[in-house]
Image 1 (spheres, one colour):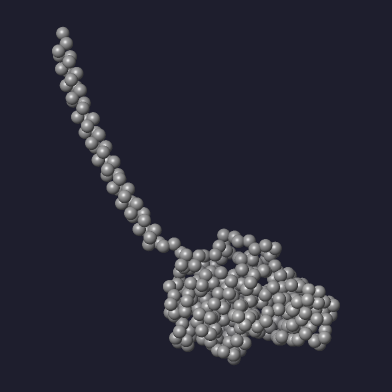
Image 2 (tube, helix red, strand yellow):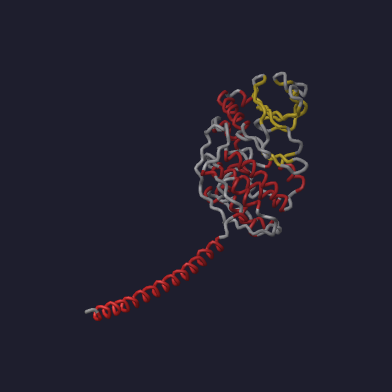
Length: 368
């Protein structure tokens, strides 16, 4: 596509920003609203699949309903010369993978701040019933002032409509970040995104991936069976508690991880480098009931998706235990006083009965 190309007589293509096996991304100008945009145009082999085009349209519509400061906004969807395209918010900056390649590992606190932002955006999508399915640093765009936005929601889910033998190469386009269940072909859950965030976090903190192999099949096997090298052995600045959090994100079993990106984000918010008081095991990791087929016209919060409170907001159980004990002690003291008064009253009444009996008998005897 030439840079002079216009899409639907509205979007003026200016330059190519990047390309992959599935699509090409361009920077363009929305001539109607006079603003810069980013446009992702599907390659020909995907454009020819009618089922995929329809699924891609549905996913674009769902993503367009996501409005969050840490999510790249989807503005429009269309087809030009038989090629489906998606118009998105243009973010001046670069994706996180390029930043890692340029500078290596990040400072611990900087890595945590970026991950908290990623969790905020992906957690918002989880509450809307959307799993990203393809969390990787390439889909995390960072501005010069380190504001992070997540992009490409629903793209991997649209790929599920293509036959396995036709999509194998693309599904394995980023096998370094796949969860064990995705590598095994199981449907992804919010915990799958948490695992992928764990791989990204590991890479941010250490400058390297937890698993590396020559083939996608070997990578899949490593994700399903192998334990990663201790992050602290690669970066001593990582605290023991932070390492526990990372390893819990990378747990093989989905139920052993944090339930959602929201929950993970609240844990990370309470962590400050090496000086933290949050334990990786403080929040439950049970599987959450999840449904991805619901429309995303609004963002409801159901009881299943209630966000756990951060550690510093958790109730002080020791104080709660002490309070009933003190109240019980006071209650016991009060009961003893009541009993004592009751005994005195009984004695008093009991002592008056013989006295009045004596008065009665004396008077009766004195009468003629």
